[in-house]
Structures are given as C-alpha cells and as structure tokens.
Length: 250
Image 1 (spheres, rainbow, N blue to C red):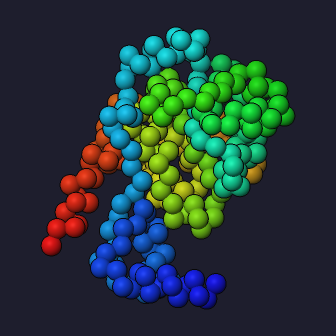
Image 2 (cartoon, rainbow, N blue to C red):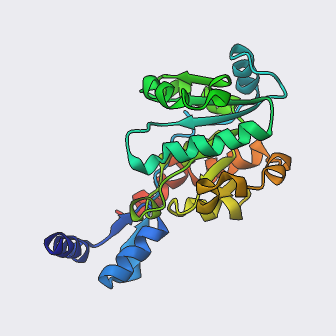
Image 3 (cartoon, rainbow, N blue to C red):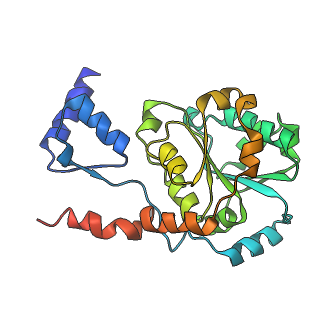
C-alpha cells in the first residue's frame, strides 16, 4: 500500500497536467498528496451527442413498439450487475417499494447479461410482472432511453464511486432523461439536484425504502428538453473537445 501511494504521488508530481474525471477526485488528490490546484484539468466521462439525444418522435415510436401505455411510468437501468458497487439488491428492494405504491410502472433493463437480471428479479414477483430486459447494440440504447421516464444510477457510497464519473449519467442526460441517483456518485449526485435533472435517493432511503417520499416523487415533473440541453452543453464530447485540445497547446 505504501509503495502504491508513493508511485501515485511521484506520477502526479512529475506530470505537467493531470486530467481528472471529477472535482471530487481533484480534491482527493489535493488533500492526499498536497498538490497545486492548477495542475488538475476537469475532464468528466462524456458521451457522443450524435448517438445520444432526445427525440419526441423516437419516444412515441419506441413506446408504441414496446407496447407501453401513455400513462405508464417507465424506469430504465442500463448496465451490468457484475460488481458490488452496483448495489443491485438495494436497487430492486427500492424499486419494489415504488411498484407497491403506484400502478402502471414498468422497469426496463438494458444489459449484456439478461440471465443475471432474470435470476434476481425472480425474487420480486411484483416487478417481474412489469419487467422488460434487452441486450441491444450501443447505437440502439438511446431509443430505449427516450422511451423511458426515469434513468436509474445507484452506486455504493464508497471512495471509488465518490471520485467517479459514470458515462451512464451523460447518456441519460443527453437523452433528456431525469435520473434517480444515489448519494456520493462523483460530482453528479449534487449536480443533478442543483440543476433539476433528477431526484437524489439518500443512502438511508436505499437501506429503508419506506423513508423515501413517494408522494412528492410521483408529483414531480421534469422538462425533457431542458435536461437534454444541459446534456448537450455540458456532457457531450462535442462540448468539451475544444477546451481539452487547448490544454495541449503551449
């Protein structure tokens, strides 16, 4: 551990610039290694706005092809469940509480391992009856995100996730999708709340879903166009390329 610590310190010290995926990671490096602030360049994990974007027409088309009713509220989870940081069991326990409270809810999971989700979902009969799972190529993901009403981004509240910058957040926001996000996910947990991009689910609410204010949640409305604009201006690769290239020009 001491050797690793020393190697990281020497690497950061010798670099002229250090690109960091979050402000939390920059602060971690500064506090841990006592390095100068100007050395660090924010560069979060972004996505391509030509692949991920909001379209009312695509939303209507996809909801029709998936057999989704106009009154259905659709939650979508995109990703895997291969690591503990995904807190999959807590996610399904939380969603189960939502499905008990409100009718006309649908859960869509986009994953490369549908069988893994099917195994977990078997323990939640209420969700299973309203559960769709797909394995789709990357260039089709935006169509499902457009069809949904909320994206899910729950992570374990640990140092790894505290300094992270999940690309999934950028994909959700670019598609105008409000995010249900847990505490401590890099810069994004606070950013989502401060900019009206989603709902923060506190750690205590994940452990005890009965504490989550379901009434207020289901009354909350979001603007898909507004969220998509935030995404295009702040979380697209196109929005950052000139700034990043400029860092390499003497």
